[in-house]
Image 1 (cartoon, chains in turn brown, red):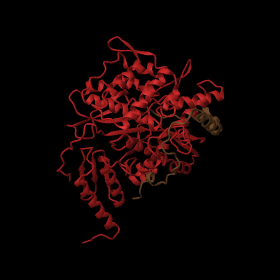
Image 2 (cartoon, chains in turn brown, blue):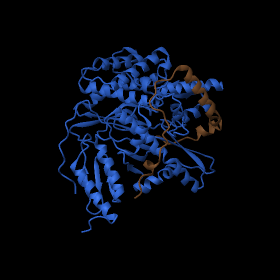
Image 3 (cartoon, one colour):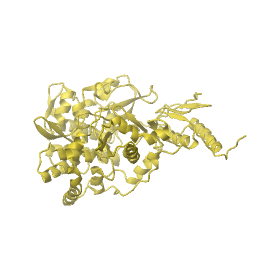
Image 4 (cartoon, helix red, strand yellow):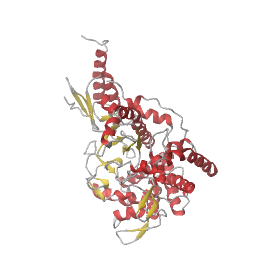
Length: 59
Length: 480
């Protein structure tokens, strides 16, 4: 039997080590830069995208 | 054959506890396919590779955790038994990777079936139609005769802890939208019950300890939100554990029994000021901030006696206090890199300012889904985290290890080791929380009733039998 697919994938380790909360000004700039990056993809058919996510309830 | 020589239960320090987190993920296929594709069909394709190696869509992994498709076609991951909070956070995060790693294969299978699309997995608690699914917390507690009275003492804490541990969400109503603490709060229907889908309680009292029932019970809390930020999970489980430790030491809890829990949990969820008051059974009215502060003060008063001081306890109390302070003062920057609701509130507010839109704009709903997307590449939470906008508790190496390695000091070690050995041997086997079984000819079962026991000669014997089979299969064993 092959080993689990879920556990055999390499993982791209690029996250930071634990860091202290960043300063306020840096936060603002980084957040705006991030919103600049994702703005385009979030705007495309946002309503249709959201509405198409429907599942039955779980527990 | 079932081994009858069950070892005596271990004597464990009262401060040691077994924790587990169960997460139901939202499953979303974004597609332009002309025919409707049901969530069941998507889940089937997503779990195809799991069924191939595990012969079932309900499996235990080599890290000791369980992966399956739950009611409503939700992929679900239940962490193995953990006995520390950092371990629990690592196993919980490992689960996000486990399910996300299924996505490329699932999309490929869908393409082969003529459906082009992208699968998104959300660690959240509601879909767009308002259906809810959960994050269940498990705390092993020492059994006592008065369990229901014992558990009821937790309810005022659970109703109000959302001002610290809530995931935060935009709530849409016919008269407009507002930001709330907890998406789960509106889906709770009673305080305690043994049912789950029919009537959602805050504490499920079904007596299923997955352990020696003479000694233990499982406190199964199903009112919490799924949380993305590691510090939020730390304070969600950590603060609840500290309260339980006081309760188990028979410390008298503050007399804060609520008059109407279901009304209270909704009132608290929808009041970001934390100042709205809820009615107590004795007729008083207190705010969520007051109630959380009372529990926090009680815990703090017992550090050094019931609760051994530690850096972790300090970290939990510090974040808990800052969360309460942030709500009381309206200064969310006290916690907006650590608590889910505040992180989300910040990014939703900023994006809304840019768009100049109202809070019920679908682009903000789209942003919310992106926040909960567990893809480390595309998910908004992970992009915030990699920008240093979210504080970490564990590092990536620890999570990577937790994907394949069980906790070393609980029963999970025995289960995970067995699963890996059984897969390597090619023998048929079945596993659940308390059994390990080699099936087929010469079937053998070991019952593991003690979740703290991580060394067991009976399991060593099973592993030896599997190693023998594996060696024979490779043609290098003693064929006699």
